[in-house]
Image (cartoon, rainbow over all chains, first blue to last red):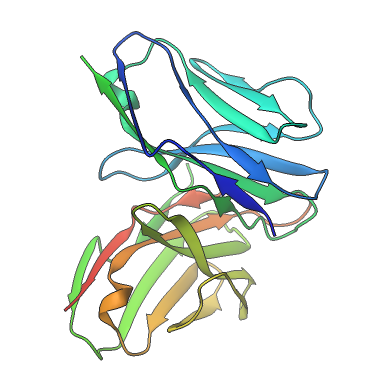
Length: 116
Length: 114
């Protein structure tokens, strides 16, 4: 069975600095997708970034980038130039690319606070 | 923009009551999901549906049932609410076919069972 682990329950960063959130996963599949979702306080969960396992290049979306280490089964999220609006709970998630239902397996979440 | 709406943001129910949580999406998505979110446990899948009238159990289906009579609507039913079902419930939808698609989430329903 696939599992996703986020070992940092809470983190904080000063505004404008860089922070990295960790995620590890376990799977026997070779083709899969990994996601980072953001859940701001009292607001809807939204997708931050997505990585396809067969792509070696790390995904980037503006200030958000990932460090995808397939052999180590590690998928960390780097937030550059942190902003107050980045304060949220962040979830790492996995899905098997061979599944046509798109079921996601989530980590426990990391609460990030950006301090002014 | 994809829109996923849930019938209530907050709900308070008594133990033993039958509870209905409704979810509606407007993007003609085939797949719909119900999760519960608890501190330290992340999101856990309760049930999902990949087509009208089709459903599959997720990781924690006990005490829940679902209904999908129309493509855009997916209901979660607590047949007899219990205090251990106090939680945040999130609905999501995604397009089917081909490969995994991004899931779009509703705002969540925070349920308190007394």
